[in-house]
Image (tube, rainbow, N blue to C red):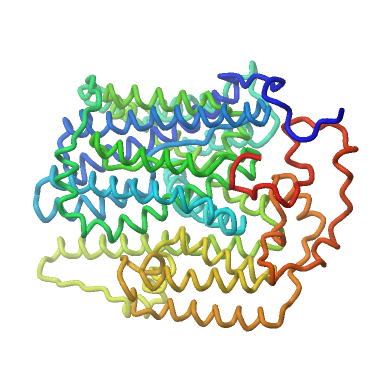
Length: 590
């Protein structure tokens, strides 16, 4: 008898708990999370001035338990997927503290309260309430996110992820690398050779560990590091276990309304980015169910805030990179355990003094390269413009932030030099010098969701699916009218409604073209092969009934009768033809 579909779990090869690739992925993800925890602890200590006893005794232990539980759960999901599909090459999703939220909760929530009250504990309490609200919104998103992922074009989801990766994951590390290129570039080159080619180090040494050791050695030998700083950092070592801080959380929630303006759009950002990351993993071959991923993120933020951490965790960008490095599920569990131990022992200050930053950040640039490339490689070639459209809002958001920080710094320096000078830089002044800050803010506010909307509109128009394009544009009008995109804060009639009006006019344009009833774009053979390779239905099959066209199916190459096809391994079964009743990509496992 000929068997159809995946092999049963009983015949599946056992997924190893640890592989050589897990070593590479562990050093990559572990170092990534390590850098982020070092940064967030420094922000708490030196920006909000939270006492070191609270940072190392409460905030980091709370973050440590969230990392441990989250990575343990993600490793479990990976092993469950491997058993279900009969595969031994499943890679767990990466997990850690959300990088954008680190800066937003510090500079937008906690710092203004600290400057107003001069009370760092009160600022910390507001941060806990903000993180709790983020978690609630992400949990809600777990039930609406799968529907969005079902119908959003892959180019839009991967494109907005590429925009985040290029702007917020790659640019800062790249600048830090070139500040000390003599340390960073050898590390970067070694990572590229080991992770993007089939070349191996002698004795199969893990490339991530060797690269970090090389950069550390160059930094210390070259005099980049400071020996007394190591002794000073060692004084912060102490055992601290997480405890609940409900009193601080409830105190922060007592004044919830000012927090909603940023918590709502950033909660939407979290589950939108989570959708894109799950889609990214699916395009690399691991089709996870979105709902448990988002539930883990949401409850991680809720539990973390109750324990004292104002930093919401999130599924990370980078699954394809760790999969390409050979990581499976062991790297995720090891990362959670190691980061938790370091948090419980207060060792992050010591690590910051021992490891040169230019030796650490090249791994982030590597991840940026992988995610940016994947957006084009795993999307239909015809949707290249949609990928770019989804990237642009994130670039605008990054550029607006750079300009804001530059102007703020310049005004502050000028005031210190001469307090009598009242320096005021307006948008008109900037526009007179071709710096379009106001437009960049409008385009970049709510960048992740804005990129998803804009990328979807462009992809639907390319496919001549104008009803879908009109729906996406109408969604953009609603989201911008309430301030979730293209606005500084959530409010009714945000920005005077001019952006919402623009989306409405675009909706009318799309509806007018839909009335002509054009046949949807016919996928070419390469696109059909790509869809089958990643186990997703054709974009034309996601059309509304009015847009269906027999031309699309007529253009498809003939498919062999699956009953007469030979048995295929489970690891490649997703490349075969899919019945039209199968679950769409993102609805669950294949």
